[in-house]
Image 1 (tube, helix red, strand yellow):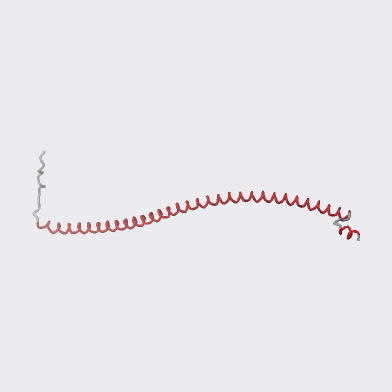
Image 2 (cartoon, rainbow, N blue to C red; image 1 turned 120 degrees about the vertical axis):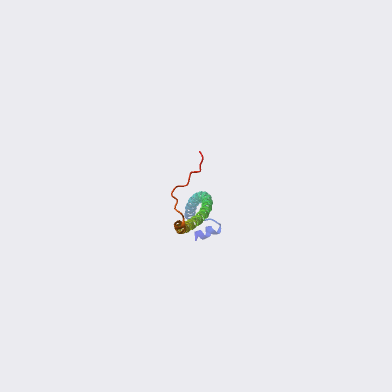
Length: 139
């Protein structure tokens, strides 16, 4: 009842005043603690933001490096393809050369056989020469 009467004039009891003051002190302490946590969180957020930017810069650098290696790799693959083609052409050329050498050996053998036959047919009809031909070289 007294509290209603005091409330009518905008006043309160001493007990309520002490409770409200204690509550206000608790809330101020809590507000200060929350303010400190907010500042710490802001600093932490700024630190993570800087780390994120550094990581993004490193990632960009790594992506550029990877792209450079991909281009080098593409160049090496092109060179490897060219060398593989050259190796195949060299192998093919060696096979053709071996085939030509074989054909030349066969032709040489055939010519030798033909030469022997023609010489053997001519020799019996020739007159045997007893003396070797005279040396016509003049010293």
